[in-house]
Image 1 (tube, rainbow, N blue to C red):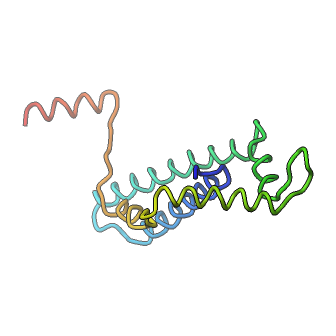
Image 2 (image 1 turned 180 degrees about the horizontal axis):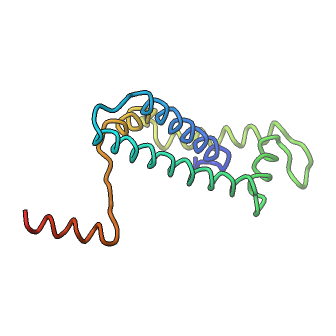
Image 3 (image 1 turned 90 degrees about the vertical axis):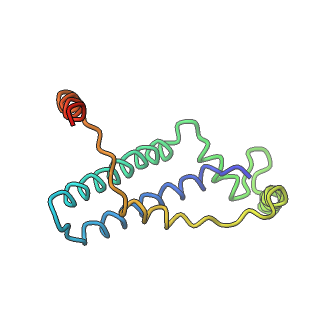
Length: 144
């Protein structure tokens, strides 16, 4: 079963909500040093960038330029362009698709990604410098 557009949209909203929760959790902890404060700022900035990019994708999805979202919603309601409303056949078609998917992967378990998001709070952010700062960092590393 390929993920439908509505399922991908739901997952994107869930990701945004998780990042918002992590930002709040990270900002509730007062850093002990300036270095920890800097790392916290970079972590929060990274999460805000992730929220922004996901939100831009959601806006494109809701604009629905190619009408795929509208067609998918109509299919969920059992509406087809030729026959009008046929809720039962749409339901059973979708059920058949789900069963075929699970038949192909019987032992696929549920993946809890909450731990992966929590690890973002523990790791040091990778800070990339640009321009003159980057060149001076290389010079310092050469002489040490």
